[in-house]
Length: 152
Image 1 (cartoon, one colour):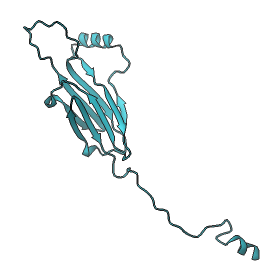
Image 2: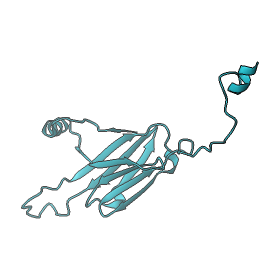
Image 3: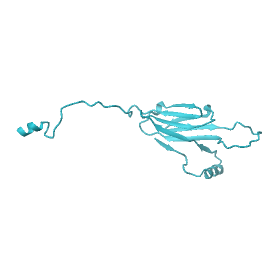
Image 4: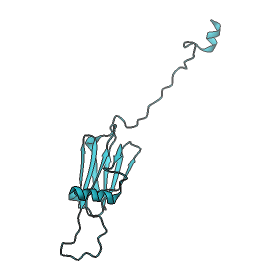
C-alpha cells in the first residue's frame, strides 16, 4: 500500500497562495498512522478532532482509498474571535491500495476524534502454516542409499 499526499513537501504558505489565486478552497492535510498486523490487514488511523461524523467520507474507487472530513468553527460571523488557531475546513487524504487487500470488506469507525479504517488482507495472501511430512531421504545416487551404491 502506498501513501500519497496531493502535494508533499510543498511550502504551506506557497500552497495557500496558489489555492487563493486559483479560487479553490484549501484541503488541509490529515495526519495519519498506517500499520500492518500479523494477519496481514492494514490499519489507518487519522486524527480528526472535532469533526462531525456525518461529514466524514471514506470511499474506495479504482484501488484508491479516499478519506475526507470537514470541521467548521462553532462561532458565528457576528462573534468577536479572539484567537482562531485550530484548522477549519476540508481535510483529505488518499492512499493507493496495493495487491493483496480485500477492498470490498473495509470497515471504519470514528471514536474520540480518531477515524480508524481497517483494510483486511485478501484470503489468498493471508499467511498459512504448511505441514511438513516425513519421508525417505533422497540421495544423489538416484534414490539408492550410499551403502547400496558401493555394492553395485
